Length: 193
Image 1 (cartoon, one colour):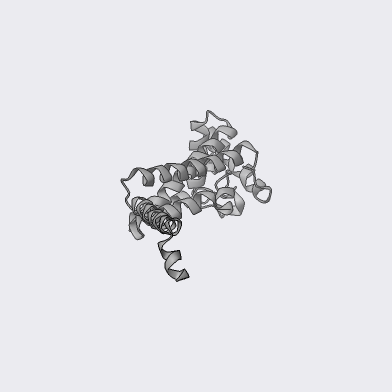
Image 2 (cartoon, helix red, strand yellow; image 1 turned 120 degrees about the vertical axis):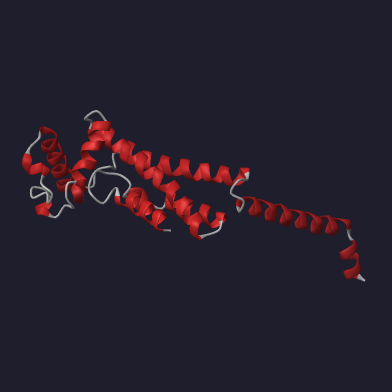
């Protein structure tokens, strides 16, 4: 008899209806996140991109752009870029004999530095800001790459995790040679898929 009363209790019925409605709302939201043209999907994507940029910009603003273990490489790269701009023949050599004991991959790294310095008007801080912008773009490119492999919802999750993970944020700052590799790698993967 008590079981029948519990089932027919108006409070219990309302509770079950509320749970069903809650589940239906959650299902609709998840379905909308899997639809790449829906407003919730686009809103979450913009939120991921904004969060990724903000974390990288905060690292730049807080002065985390210089890595103590790579400071010699950064200073050497800056020196070679200045020599390249001055027209010195040794800085234009393909093997870069005067940078990192000749292990740099040709003049590409010097040209990357020179391009950033030209964009920034000769300012190292401006060049660092362009690196922040470039590596914030990587967050979106991770989403584009993940969309080729996964459902839109999982692509959002991939984008979000890359945007907030500590190591991708830490290595998105600085002016030494591994920094642009995330950008180049994701562009390579997108082009191969």
